Image (cartoon, rainbow, N blue to C red; front, side):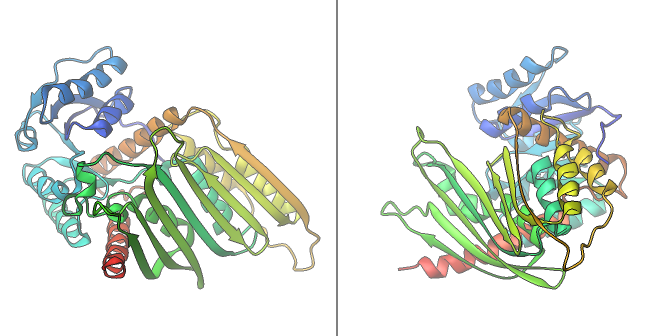
Length: 390
């Protein structure tokens, strides 16, 4: 169960980009969150982060400002360091923060390599400090509902799945295109979706990636085909990411999951629409209705808890092979995308607070999950590098 923390933490955010600004505003309403310090290279960027916090927190006090992350890390009044810097700085700055006795919440991917992340996990254990990677998609109720539909095989076992992620083109010269700093799209961005895929379909047993290079040297279109295995069944899943969309065009993220008796689709980078169709028994239809009815329509940091509780109430149902089946079709549509993004960020932070307060807790998304996601992204990136060379 993910619940509010009973403690109030003084938090420093190192890295004052757009995501830091979002996070400061999203976490501001939580009683456990107090923004104590911000580190960023310019006064303007730091002020945007502080303003986002103050707009949502009427009782905000002074927020200390630092130009360098290292200065924030040694601030004795900071309990938690949230690192929202470019990925190449995640591992060295996390190491420094852990050595200073801080708890650390890392923006994904947590490092450029699984080995570097693993070294910081070992350091966190020696220091008795909490460490986590900010992988948020599993904290969304529609992602949890898909997991329950798959694992309970209401539509039969999964045969094949695909992810299509069409995102806006990142500005030329941004660190995103420097793979020495970002790790490349599958490492910097793709880990979010590998985490969901592993949760739904099982661990990766093989993987291969590709990348297409543009004349300017960037590689904005990448993909990977991964064979997942869960409960003895192997499932091919194709992941595609294209950072090519005109800024005036709508972005789109679409999961398409095919089962032996139907189909599940999930739309949105922050998922906003879930559609389920297929042939099911009357018991399966009733159980799916109960599960989907439990999904909150308004943003809530307790959303996945509500979906899980509804799933736990469902009795195991294995219809006879000759049981009559009927067509089933249902769509759940949520509203307030920004509100849901804030809600899953809040739920991730509260889960992290539980790790601080009880070292025996594992959290929903564990450090071992983060390592597996990053290792998978590395494997696919290594394959894509060789396959795209000319």
